[in-house]
Length: 294
Image (cartoon, rainbow, N blue to C red):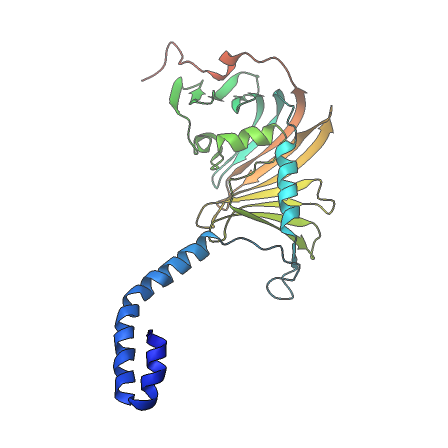
């Protein structure tokens, strides 16, 4: 006779017995309640995704409307396929770098090859290099010519911060100079329609709904106006304003304007750009000067 049957039968004729049975059943089930609750909440957190809702979010004044989730993933696929046949590139332009204390202007030349290899030269007014920066996919190099200072370190996420004061990843710098839009690793994505100001926002999120990137599109969803990168706590790392033009079937950058919240950043105006040029692998390896100062 199972518990519920006994409870119904004895409850009618033996009220004290039913009280005893309930206490006994409670002792059996109470120890497993925390386990059941923990399993429920863990599975809920791991499965959180942005649903393809078609409704206004936040207050009526928020100015954003969710779009279907499938549309978000279609846009991501389009971004990843942009310039997919571009194997190498080089360019020249003028760069302004600033922080709270000073503003500097210089010329800049760069060259890149597939697999994320890149080299950047900051040039003085005479055209002579002031600083060289390179990455061969494994090592990261910086050479300050006027000081004869040379650095070689394993490639990591923060290498480019030494030159630009922005936590720009090597892969993100490569994508931006190659005319591509960096796409952060994510677990879920959503597309919002902006009512005020027009356009759309593609939001990439990690688990438990932490945004790691926001990509702002125009009304046609063909052009990206800007991107915002965030750390895992939701703090802004940098904001990049993008201007791109079509050249020989590729979207190439015409201006990059990147800054953080600490009044640090740079603006690059691209003047010349070449696509699919020959690049020697040795281009991305720097060596110390013979008279390096220790």
